[in-house]
Length: 171
View (cartoon, helix red, strand yellow):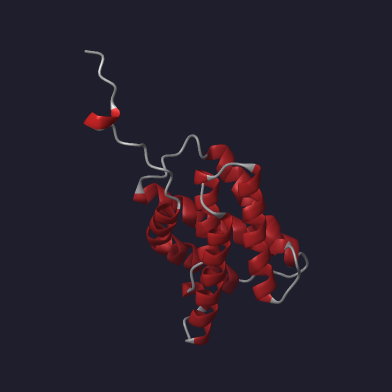
């Protein structure tokens, strides 16, 4: 299991990079939802209650950075975590194509749940749909890189190699 503090630090870094990309003039539809990639990773590699809590904290960090209501991103991240944790035993996430497809679909689902929770009475326009699809595609494009980084940070203790001196001889 990954150190939760390291993952939250990575989420903070992702949110900071998203803000920098916005300030550098990248259009909103081209900014990837890298926190969603972190939630996808958690759902596939840490299907525990602490994983759900970490997904909630990741969404809460996104809520705090968005300066809107406190809770819609957190709720959307936990809902996506729960759905993916249920499906994670049936999907092969080691495939790059599957990871990208799951990330794209999760980005759309998380954004839709956020819109339902935060903007219940606001009409959705064509520009909003374009932004959702663009962010899903850009999130899918960075998913292999971020998942690879998180896998490296998620190193499990290696099996002790059996050498000649460590094996008891029965002869």
